[in-house]
View 1 (cartoon, one colour):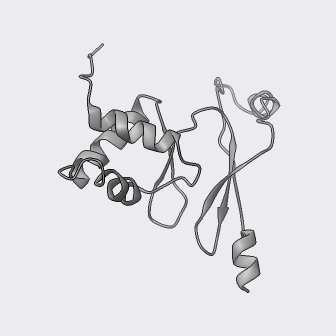
View 2 (tube, rainbow, N blue to C red):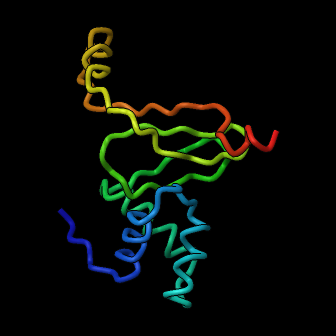
View 3 (cartoon, rainbow, N blue to C red):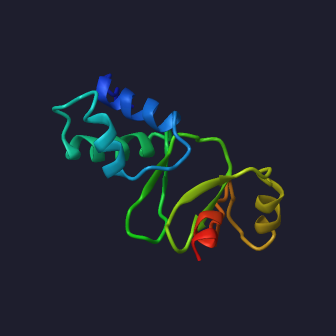
Length: 129
C-alpha cells in the first residue's frame, strides 16, 4: 500500500470540512482556505478533495446541480437536497441498516451500505415564495 505524504493543506481541507455542516463545493473550500493559505491553487484543492474522498476521509455528494458537495461527516447519515437553491442539509434521523438487509433479499451480491438523498423545497425557499 502506498504511503501518503502528510500535507498541511490537505489536513486544513479536512478540518475545514469537519467544522462545517453546509456541505461546501470545491470552490467554497478554495475561497475559504485562501484566507489561511494565500498561495493554494484551485487544482490543489480539487486533487486533495479527490484523494480524501477516495481514502474515505470525507464524503463526496453529487446533488444534480452540477457542483459536487463535500461532507466531513463520514458517519452514515441522510441528506436533504433543495431542488430550488440546491442547499444540502443533514437529516437528523437514524440511519437504518435494515435497508441493507431488505435490499439483499433482491440481490445476489453483498450489500455493504446505502446512500439516500431526500429532495424537495427547503424552509428558506418556502418562506421566499
